[in-house]
Image (tube, rainbow over all chains, first blue to last red; front, side, top):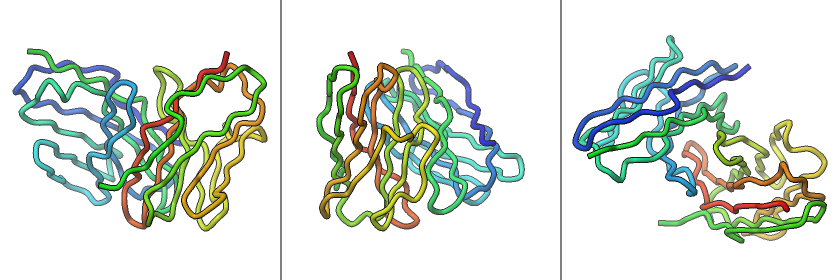
Amino acid sequence: GQNIDQPTEMTATEGAIVQINCTYQTSGFNGLFWYQQHAGEAPTFLSYNVLDGLEEKGRFSSFLSRSKGYSYLLLKELQMKDSASYLCAARNSGNTPLVFGKGTRLSVIA
Amino acid sequence: EPEVTQTPSHQVTQMGQEVILRCVPISNHLYFYWYRQILGQKVEFLVSFYNNEISEKSEIFDDQFSVERPDGSNFTLKIRSTKLEDSAMYFCASRNSNQPQHFGDGTRLSIL
């Protein structure tokens, strides 16, 4: 079976750093994706890891450990507009669809 | 930046009626997907489409559902006889090889 687990909710302070964890169990593996989704809107692509290690993209970084079935998304210098759901998704092979977790709703407070 | 566009943004339909949701994927993309998201729940895969045929479908995608690419640009999802539980956001996504999927803004389907 396939399973993606991530925390339901997190709260962090403006200007701070937050780490959103994701664990996955899939029958194969060809990439771990992070999307941002504001309420009522479409998921927007943030980052993608297929090899172990850290990928950095401005204020957002994502880390992958394939042996542990684990990823995290790191958001630095939090802004109020970062309040959104963050979706972890895995792909079994190159052309298969994404399997999404339930998303982590992040609230950024002043 | 090119976008995936979906129409309509909101569709209200009586139970039992047919509904067609439309998508225009990004023009040079080859892989197309439909997902749905019931309010407060996770994004769920429905069907993927490549080379003018369905490449994979989920358990949700039963005989009530069908997809078509009637011309070179549109990609449609049809629900033949809608049920109350079909109420959800429906997202179309497209991608090219070795690229992430890009999602449209979705169609909110409300079944009465």
